[in-house]
Length: 327
Image 1: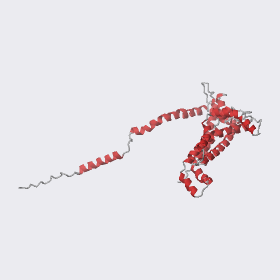
Image 2: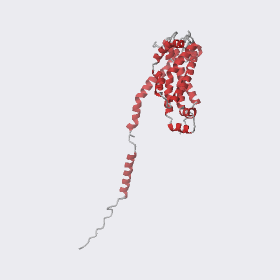
Image 3: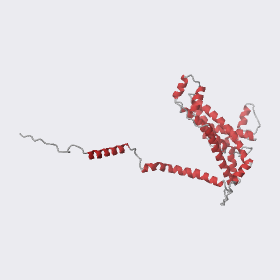
Image 4: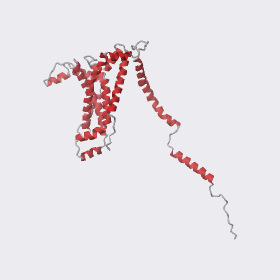
């Protein structure tokens, strides 16, 4: 039998260099397609702006456009009704700063600023106490936060009867033999102190919730380590809790300062600004809707806005938000 030897044809079973190069490029392209994160096309880049379109439109329409109009009206003598508007330049600002009775109302804000300090201290105390295991702590949390849920108009009417002559406060004091015929809302000092006390009762719950949430976000291991080191509750509060919630405390201070400068509904409902309780916002509202001086009222609103921004900037510079390095 004759055996025939077959010699392989040259190139059969071998890959040419061009083929290897083309295959390598294709493999790299496939790997790139697999590693490329999904959704990087043109539509995906536009999608976030589509979601932001509605809130940005509302923000610009109901915030920035009214602020721009307010700044414009502050340079006019518009009365809020007439279709004619005349530019007066900085006349409204000059009148605002040269008439002491228009700027003197800022002193009333000091009562509310002192009340804000009290409410921050009280809220921080109860938030610290109720963050630990305590019987009926959920009940106390609800009691502290409940006043903040009540409408400001309702609170104003409730405390109007509370402070009136022969009202609830006088009746309670008479039970302890401390009856008095003092008119709580009859003179500037007692009226402002009483109104500031109402603000403490109402807004303590807001600061309490902010502080409580921040305190409960502190890892429990830190408390255990502090107890092992022999730290008392006071030491835990001073060296653990306060540094951890410093940004929240700073936020509460900013809200307290801006709120004390822009108090409106409680004094407006309870006294209408009488007996020396007129705040800057109440005066601005009266200028606009009672005396038809919308231009001057707009200038007052712009000044209040600038003061709040300035105080906030100074506070952030003096007490910057430092990150607590606890873990």
